[in-house]
Length: 33
Image (cartoon, rainbow, N blue to C red; front, side, top):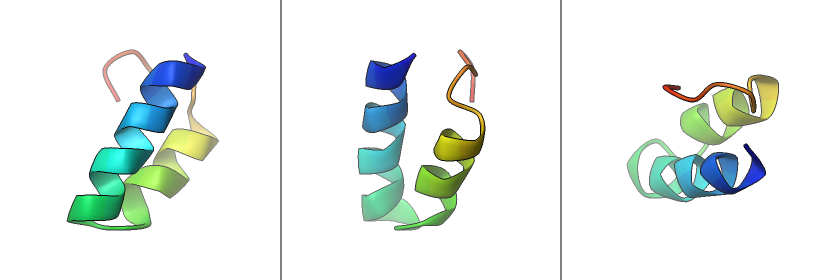
């Protein structure tokens, strides 16, 4: 789930910049986000 987290963080960086990255860090085991 690390790869997914990285991808989510990258997308969040361009969209929210921190919101997605933070949530991803808190729930890296989320397949749907």
